[in-house]
Structures are given as structure tokens and as C-alpha cells.
Image (cartoon, rainbow, N blue to C red):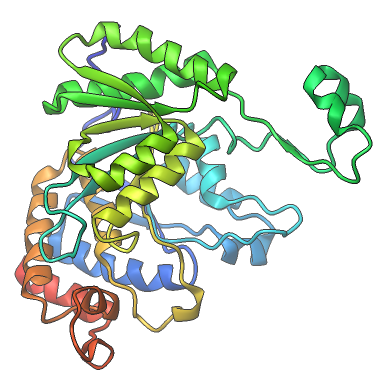
Amino acid sequence: MATDRDVLKVSSKKERYKVAYIPGDDSGFDVMEACMEVMEALNPPIDWVRADAGWCMWEKYGNTVPDETKEVLQNTDAALMAAITSKPGVKGFKSAILQMRQIFDLYINLRPAKSMPGVPSYRDDIDMVMFRENTEGLYSAVEWRPFPEELLSIHPNLERYRGKKELAASLRIYSYEGCERIIRAAFEYAKNTGRNKVTVVEKPNVIRATGGLFLDVAKEVCRDYPEVEWNMENVDATCMWLIKNPQNYEVVVTTNMFGDIVSDEASQLVGGMGVTASGNIGENYALMEPCHGSAPKYAGQYKLNPVAMLNAAGMLLNYLGLETYTETMEKAMFDVLKEGKVLTYDLLRDKGVADWETKASSTLDMAREIVKRL
């Protein structure tokens, strides 16, 4: 049934909040420094607490989320994290963000994709919000390499793999509860924000068990929201329609891996990963982050634009019920983007500015220009 609890908002309102900030890795430190300069000038009712996670902690402690970081997060209302570095093929390595999603049950990955003033995009009328299930499916770390031979007998279709040189397997497991809560969150959001349509994205015609469960739960949940139109699309069709008619999407809800892919595609339509942000949200905690990576080759050079990091901060402020601070920050940021005089190299390049390399401003220069407009 529909619920009065808005999971996209902090569960307990306060006069001041305690928020962890995590600089992450490499260029993550650069964009977080810029973001904190803007936050200091904006001055929301937040007490900031430093914590560390990512590859830098793996090198120091052999754990991307050390115990002291977990303790900080457990004693804060939310977290703001910059980009982190994850490296494949490292024995025992566990991604910091995947760990935090599991530890705090951050089952919603909220990915807005909206055309922004002054940022080149595919169309200027794109405004969609994607809900990606964040804790189950192929990213839940139920994997084997090598695959145990004794498990080949658990399903008849595994017999054809017997005798192969090497087998690896990653299980795609969904629960009814996991499907229900992410789908309900999407419908609740549509109802509460006046959006008229939810698109459920999966591949149940081929991945019949797990995709079928997700679709069946959607059919059940939608009965509680007769005012919200909904439809189901196969994920490959969604990838096509996002390019053809992205303006037709309002709210999209999908599973973990498919959501990872289609949300990145949606980001590219509105300017790329460098300007979009992501929220990891559960019943009692939230962690916001930029969509882009840590760009190790630019670490310490202050080359990345701070827009995605600031949009992540805006999502954090909205989660805490501090929307007026978000509006003030966005207005200043959009003014700088539209004016186009103090921008980083990537934004100038994407605008087609001649001599963008020599005209580029630094991450901090752009942040400080935003501060002047607050």
C-alpha cells in the first residue's frame, strides 16, 4: 500500500545536521575542495565531519572503508562523497561504494538527468529521474571464480559447462522485498512530485525468472497508484528510445546493472558524467556523489569541473529538507555556466569554444566564481 513516509527525505528533521564529507581519491580531492568552498559560503545548518574511503584507504589499511570511517558514517545524518578509484584484478579488493550500499542498505540509486542552462545537451527539455535498485542483482557480489564443480548439478542447463577449462559465475538474485521497495519508491516519487508516468525497465522476455519477478511486482505495486500511468520496456528498447525521444521519460525504475547502464546513457544526454550526480538512499541514511570517476591523471591539477560535485551537494541539501539552499546554489552555478567566462577545460571544449585549452579556468576558479554569485 502507499506510504506517508518519504524515503527521499531524512527521517528526522533537525535544526542542524551532522554530515560526513569524503574526498575520495585522486581528482576527487580537487572537486571536494571546491565544493566545500561553496558550502562554506552558502552556510547551510550543517556540521561537516571528515572521513576517508576508497583506494587511498585500501593502500593504507587493506580496506576501502576502514572501521573508523564506518563509525563516522554511523554517527552522521548523511554523507557527501567525491569520486573514488576502483581497480579490477586486485585480490581481496572491495569497492568502497558497494560496501557502503550494503552496510547501510542504500537500496535506491537516484539519478536525475535534466538539461541545465549553459551546458550543451542532446535536447533542452530533458527532465527524467531514474530509480536504480542498488543492493541486489549482479552487483550483490555472489560470485565464484572458479565455479565449484559440485554446483554444476543444481541446474540442468549447467551440464554443458562441465569439463570447460575455467568457469566463473556471477549470480543475479532478486527478492520480492527488494523489487517491491524500489518500485514503490519510484511510484511514490511520481505521485509526490506531480510526474505522470513511471517506466519499468527490465528484460523479462529473456531473463524470465528475475526479470519476470520484477515485472510481476510492478504490476502489483501500480494498483496502489491509479493516478500514475506506467508502462514496461525491455532494456534494449529503452536504450534506443532514450536517444530518439528522451523528453518522453519522467520516472524510470529498473534493476541494478541495467540501471547502471541506462542512467549513464541518460547522463550523457544532458552533458555527461561530469555534470550529473547520484544519490544512494536508504530508510535511515543517504550518501550523495558525483557520477564521474576520479580521473587519476588529473589528480592535484584542479582540471575537473565542480558541477557534478555541486549537484551531489544539492541532492544532499534536498534530502535534509534544505531546498532553499539548493535553489540559491543552483542559481549561482547556472549564472556562471550561462555566462561562460569562468569554466573548466571540459565545459569550454564541449561548448565548442576556440582555444579552450588556453582559456580554461581551474576547478577552484570556477567554484570561487560561483561563490561570488551567491
